[in-house]
Image 1 (tube, one colour):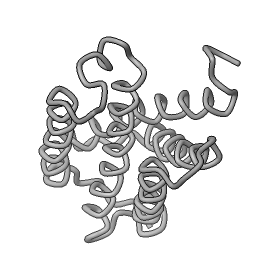
Image 2: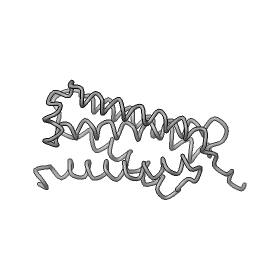
Image 3: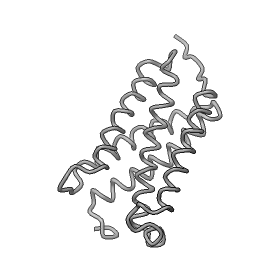
Length: 163
């Protein structure tokens, strides 16, 4: 075990962190109108794998993390189809941006939850995750993603691929 984690949990956490980092690079590309193809593939793949590796983790009941993982997989399927099947044509451009950024948001949302559960200084501020610091953090993250998502939809205009 690494840091008291099972190997699967360790892989899950590493994939999640890579997915978030790559997703932020992709977000920057959407905001600047300059997509980063390799980073996009890394973001989509690691975020899919984050959700998939989350399901076999030990749990005795259906958890919010399972629901978030399932929702993320649906959003990622839509984003992947919009990008690789429909080539971001027409409405698929904004559908891609919205679904990819919502999947990134969900990954960050879970990251905030985990941070408040695992990091002592944050756990002390919100031991039950119903306290103001936790709620403020989640509302700020959601608001930031909404604003950035709207800006990304407006700015991201990929060049059409040659036939």
